[in-house]
Image (cartoon, rainbow, N blue to C red; front, top):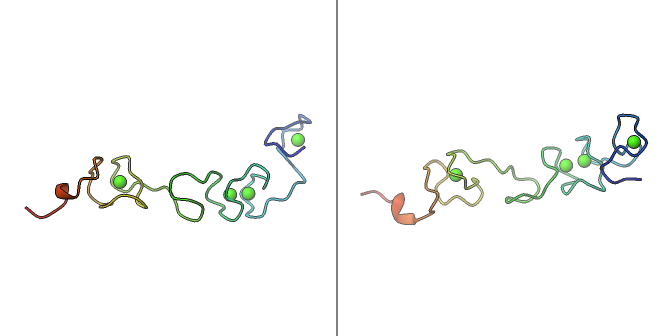
Length: 81
Ligand SMILES: [Ca+2]
Ligand SMILES: [Ca+2]
Ligand SMILES: [Ca+2]
Ligand SMILES: [Ca+2]
């Protein structure tokens, strides 16, 4: 069955089931069937990497300033003084 598990113990998981994006994770357990870089929707949704360029824990897609570490996401942290 297609469940993300190697049911028959042959070392291959869900072999023979469709894998639309070819990332090795069958469609039945791939939350992003058209994004080979993601298998979970994550925070930024399929098609957008959950990259956090400045390392403040807020992915670029929601970071108000993705090149300034500002985990509080307070706009006054990034305004010119
Ligand atoms: Ca198997
Ligand atoms: Ca896949
Ligand atoms: Ca995928
Ligand atoms: Ca960030």
